Length: 192
Image 1 (cartoon, one colour):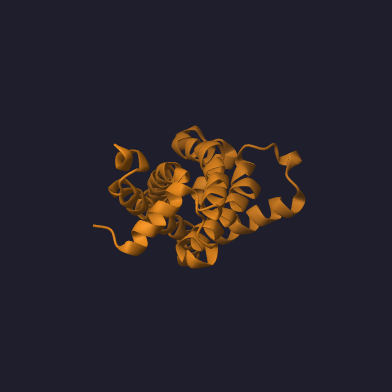
Image 2 (cartoon, one colour; image 1 turned 90 degrees about the vertical axis):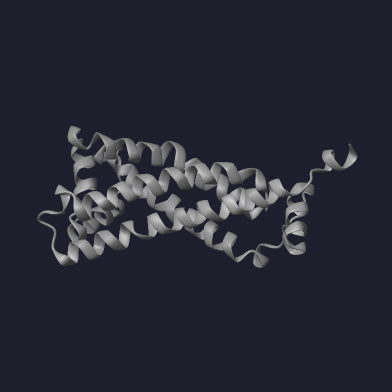
């Protein structure tokens, strides 16, 4: 059974009453994560699909610095359009076509305290956790690990691990919130 605070929060979401963002620390974390990830996706990861002549020099240098530090075999393969990495190129395309809109919807929905965004964020979290975990396993346990130094691995892990943990946490949080909303009797149920 949900606590009174949870019931109040759930009923507030259903009636349109907005709780102050400052009272929702996880929403602040998720909004900041979405803003950071949206920026990285559009400015860095999208370079795999944009003709190099159209990429602003500072962004190109930023990507080249990341590759120099990490020797990321996945991004390198995507930039080369290596067909043996079609799975990763597909993951990048999904990032741009599915995840970026989810980031924008997540920022808006969580800012507005609108529970209608929860299903989309659950779908995003499942996609992001799965694809990023595949990347992490590929660079730590797969053939992509060969030739990577300890410094390269630290750079790769610092780039991949948070993008497994945070979407997983987000997904669990959104599932918990959705379950609590489903436990609450709806206004229609009360009038029957």
